[in-house]
Amino acid sequence: MAKSQTSPNTNLVPIAIIASLFFIFGFVTWINGALIPFMKTINELTDAQSYLVASASYISFVVMALPASYILNKIGYRKGMSLGLIIMAIGALVFIPAAEARTYWIFLIGIFIQGTGMTLLQTASNPYITILGPIESGAKRIAIMGIANKIAGALGSFIFGALLLSGIDKVKEQLETASAEEKGVLLDTMADSVFMPYLIMAIVLIVLGVLIRKAPLPHVEAEETEAEDTTNTTAKTSIFQFPHLWLGVLTLFVYVGAEVIAGDTIIAYGISLGFPAADAKFFTTLTLLAMVFTYALGVFLIPKYLKQGTALRISAALGIIFSICILLTTGFTSVLFVAALGISNALVWPAVWPLTLDGLGKFTKTASALLIMAISGGAIIPPLYGRIVDLNKHELIANGTQKAEAIATASTSSYWILIPCYAFILFFAIWGHKYKSWSKK
Image (cartoon, rainbow, N blue to C red; front, top):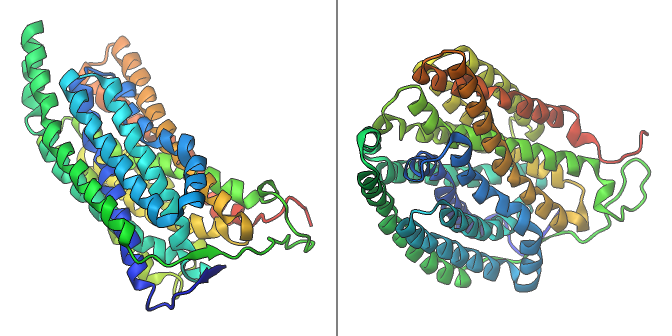
């Protein structure tokens, strides 16, 4: 599957370097859980509007995945990763004028620019780590990346939750009785809290972008052989001849949507249930720690004790069970089941990549770009959840339900959207990844 000039021992250095990149975009990605309630407050948004924070980040993967693949073919992995980090730094700097103007669309532009940089990093790093060694242990290597990614996410959520959400409950109380002028002052002061964190983030990203140019990354490529049709041994000539690829893309699309809902809605969900922001700001960390624990299990179990396909089936089944439990419980128990989705989510990404790329040969790069584009599920499914929350909330209030109760009930009941997502992942795990040809033979 892979051509590499490195031995397993010498692969340790590039694995560590790629893990550091996963740490970086894990940190940047998972602060969205704190940004969503923060943006909702300072820009006075609806639930659906606030989840555009996730949309702006993840839609960049649709727009930029194929251009990123083209750029990487032109300048190579190392320069591409460096460029990605610099672009992310530019996106962080955009937050400064956005805070000054307290203008939501400028914030969204900054988030989109950061997503563009992450697209370059993801397009390079995911296929690289997948083909760095044997395909049957691809999920194990990606699980190691996942540990770095989610530990960074937990740190990012904790740090930015403390920086951005500190005192938000008191501000909300003051806003209810403040005059228009006082309200403007309160919100401007709150918006200014993003200045220093994002300035520091930009500086760190620029430094790393310079350092990665000198990183010792060996040249690794998928074998440039003809991909063969296992049913009739004829050479494939197009990516459209691989049904398992397209099913894998759809699987990642719904998975990323489900993962973002689990990580990015849990703080807002806790607040909707009546938890103070001072407590709710830690909830995303619970989700990510659950993922880190399961990633560690994956590193130990795959492939020696657990096959990639089996891990994916177990993950999908747990996702369905936990989603139902969210709907049937209330209060902190329900929050814990949202966090438990981290267990069901952890091994999906590591398992889908090698199962999807298996047997694609010279089409691996194009297929990788398509899989990166599937990250757009995080741009579409979470705002859809937010829209469902808004609709349910307004309907309950119109029928006489108290506002606080309506918000809590609507937020809980709208998690039904996760069930079809995990059902499709289960389909791919059992049958979809086996469809290597459109032939019925």
